[in-house]
Length: 305
Image (cartoon, helix red, strand yellow):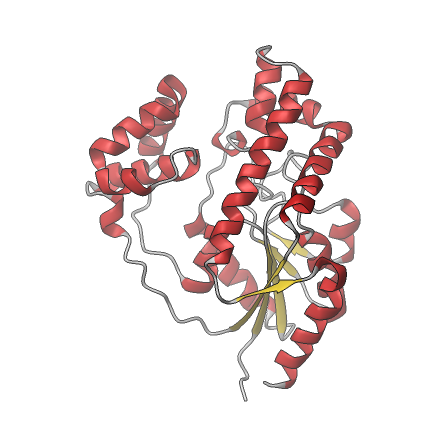
């Protein structure tokens, strides 16, 4: 029998119901949740990041939600360090812990480890972000193509965060980012059960469309205006805020922005699903009985230990 701690991961595409499932399971298990969302860690943007509600935060203790200022840097490397430290603390109090989020690189960093990379200096980070501001993503991609043609050939060229990170590391290390990526899987001192809710594609897209409408009704425009008033930070270079910037700049009206957010969110969800379908460890849950099925799987996992 295993006496290792148990980690329950609730992941999946955006708008699939991860938070509600995670909160319900955490209450059932009497444990805590670590967020694996690369944007919910920032303060002041809860609407645009679909952060847990005040009620959900009151019902279950959450970690890595609303902790950083918009100007602060965060990465999968830092998440790995923070999540492992927080989980060690939870496991001194509970035998089971939960992680909830759709940032797939964060989930992989936690469960499989991430290659060691040089610490990017503030000077290098500022240089790349200034390049992004001055020349846009195409300018950063052009520089990445010179520094690391191998990674340039495979990177998602619409993913600003990954492109920027790869160039930062290449410049800081003085060698191509791709040469530092070994893909080695690290042994972890805990067992993992990983869930995702398996919505039919059409229903998932309808949920995304409804979520976008709700975000706008709840005040996404005002939230974005307040956030951009503080600065054009990398934390805001994400779906929802990038499109709202067009409204703030006067280059698009609200209905165009609403449709563009929904479209880009659906594209993002497709990428999440592609990533997840490659992971044979994911237990896909029928939306109609996701909670009872997950509970039964967890009961069996605990009783077999």
